[in-house]
Amino acid sequence: MTTELQSNVLSAGTIKKVMPACMVYALVQSLTFMVDTMIAGHFMGADAVAAVALGMPILGLMLSFTAMIMQGGFHKMLHCMGKSDMEGYRRMYSLALTLTVIVDLIFIAACLFLTDGLINISGGSKATEQAVEYARMYIRTDCPMVLFFCMGTLFQLVVTTFGYQTERMICSIVNVGVNVVISVAAVMLLPEEYKIAGLGIGSAAGAFAQMIVAFVMIKYRKISVKFRLYPINAENIKDSLDCVRRGLPTSVDSMLDSVSGSVVNNIVLGVFADGTGVLALVSIIKTIGSVVRTVGRGTFYASEPLFGILFGGRDKEGIKKTFTASIKFGLIYAAVLAVILIVLQSPILSFYNIGDSEDGRIGLILIALSGIVSVFPFTLSSAYESTDHLSLSLLVAALPDSVLYPILVAVLGSIFGVTGIWLAYGYNFVIFFAVYYLILAVVSKRFPVPLDRLLALGKIKDRFTVLDVSIPTEADNVTFIAETLQKFFDENGTSKKNAYLSALCMEEIAADYLSHRKITAKPGKQSYMDIKAFCDDGRIELVLRNYDEPYNPLIFELDDETFAKIGVTMVQKIAEDITYSYSYHLNIISVIVA
Image (cartoon, rainbow, N blue to C red):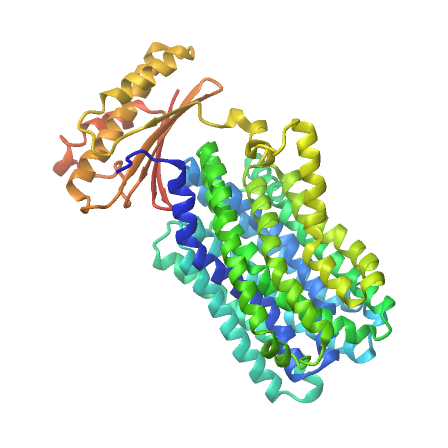
């Protein structure tokens, strides 16, 4: 049996384990924004669908600003988790939640008082009068959803950092379930002129339910995070701005998507004779496209926390293996989903009352197959974003979907008609990646491009570990740990005192884990352990990772375990700082020696 903590423990194995829950979560998350189009198309007709299409870019723009804060805070929380800095984790959670509420309240006010101007920007000036009236009512009733949804999403991100992907999935299922029930009931009960408001009321109710359930999940899993207001000082302002900086790619991508959606709306309404009818068809096929892209998003959701934790723990090989494992499993899921959608195309199109539309049938097939393509940009963007390559993440996420897409709609739409819209929507990344990959090949003078170069890991090599020590979990003698670490630090100019103390600390903690495992291990249950060591600005940091059930060696009863814990007690006295965290089946101990 392999006893080393290998990178694939946190890649293939973990990705395979969390991928199903992440795919369901991504599907349900997409349904959150598809429900309104589906209900409008089934119960209310083309003007209602067009109204939702006019409102979505505006609501998307609102969500994108908050996503900047949430994603940035999430990445800082993940990096704190990877370094076992739980106090920093809690502080970033509170800062992110505070900023989220403030920004969302401002945008809700804008939606309520600047509705007509926003609708015109989204293409309302070219839509029918009825569609504009519906859009006005839809936006005003739906905008509270943004606050509830974003707070609930931040609570879900907290749950996600500890590896509870199933709980995250349940929260989103509750959202969609409540949304559908309330929306359908409202549409059936309200007078004809107010039915569109039922969609907004349902969306807000679903988001509120998601927020409550996500908060309950934090309490249920006994995750130790509590909101508190932090003082306005230099440190908190700096970290808040860093949240914005780190979340900028996600936010800008979402904002550009919203702008792109408005541009495409205007192109469709201006180029095609039956502009409103084509816009309704495009909205329906893009709704199906949202289902298709759940595979890419699911891959993103599965890999993002691992990329962040591995980056925080300076595990370069783990990042590479996580990337390849994510692509592999993502492609499998995408192919299966494409087959299912193509087989079920007739009932799907009939649900939207477009079963006789040849353009609709071609669109469904092309968009279903495009899911295979979508795995690559989502995974690549996740890797870039989690490893602080924010400009590259923005390039991959935004340029194909937000810049190339409307250009290709105009060009391909004029050549192939409505089919050109499907090609532009589903395959814009192919053109982008062909050029991007060619540039990387020329710059690196290698073909194929090495994975290190594709993921830009070479540029941040100083952030990664210099020394890895793998530890057999059946070992009876761990003196080799101290010998290996002391030799490493001696060779890197560390003082003999600090080298000795560092080596001694990690040997004692490793010995404690091995002793604990001998008592508690279940037959056939695999466990892995390694130690990483590096120096930053004269400080020595050591990280022990143990792939096993939760066990914090820093907590013990003195009267019962004083003798057995004498080594750990000594480490606590020696170290400048020592912290513990548990995430994704990893016990992480971080020790800093001055």
